[in-house]
Length: 211
Image (cartoon, rainbow, N blue to C red):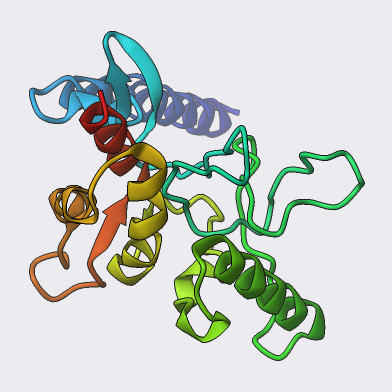
């Protein structure tokens, strides 16, 4: 009986100690580190603000929707496998925008017939929007990222959209290309990944340039 009591008390002491360490001290330590200068914005979701108003996050890509599809002034993100149904017909728009309340890929393989048909549909829609042939549409423009909320596009996809964005915003193509360059991030550590263009920041820069 005495041995059982000792074992029970030892277990309770370990439980109490681990509760304090992992349930109190560790969370407080993480919170304290997140308050350090240079880290706080990341800890709060990397929110982008304009004139004191939150306009999005530079970590989450939500495809902008043009009021008039025939006069579309925006750079567009990659499509999403969890896109919203904007017209209420029961099927999501193949080009987005993404549903910000969820994320994920389609889990369809590269030989899945439905996926291949969707990719071809996206390619045709983008080619029509940009006034080019389907063969000129880059791969990232028609394939969703693993999260479906990729904030960046390839420089090639950005370049494809330059002419339309310049025309619809009353800017020169050289002006827009300069903005694309300013919002392009290179490879991590110089070797990891591929260069990417942050679509939210680029669209904000375009809107600022037209004023």
